[in-house]
Image (cartoon, rainbow over all chains, first blue to last red; front, side, top):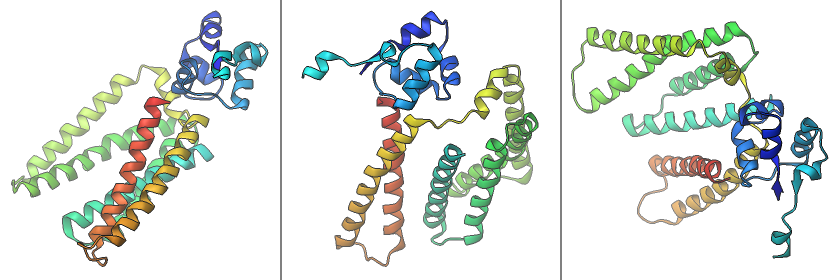
Length: 69
Length: 188
């Protein structure tokens, strides 16, 4: 799964630590999500989308090339 | 609360295994009172660190660190000194304690102006990713521990009544669990 978390974080001028506090996870988790090392749970994904006031699919989306393989 | 309890039990288990192993390999027996002391101490320390989010508790725990951490260091120094047959006088122990206490004190004074440290200090450090890591690491460690136990039962060299064999199995299991957690944390 891919995401635009880094882009939205930059738009809102937030550090990883600040975003982590807003959604009650650790900074390491935000870092892992941004770098594609960890796929968040639906609950956390919705929480992040709600925080940025966007639809969840705007933030998280499937990598079609990966799906085809 | 669930997050804190998870960390508490992980820490408690690790300290208990370390205590049992250290006692067995240094004196050849266990002291139940010592083990209970470690459990009680860990519980109190955990309460001070992570119970309610109050400022005075933060400072109470800092003070505890300054007062008690040098004691732990002294124990370690004493253990090394006994192992190496080095004589250390009471005055020297007092000096080591005071130096350690001063070091801790200056360390916390230096950290004090950073307000965010308090916030980080009281933040739960377990989230869904950590729980996932705990689960995965525990699953593999459970398999590994069972394999080790079967190996220990089948091996012909050390008698099964030898406590050291089972303590070794326990240590290998917990080291594997911790290493697993560390690798998962780095990779995922």
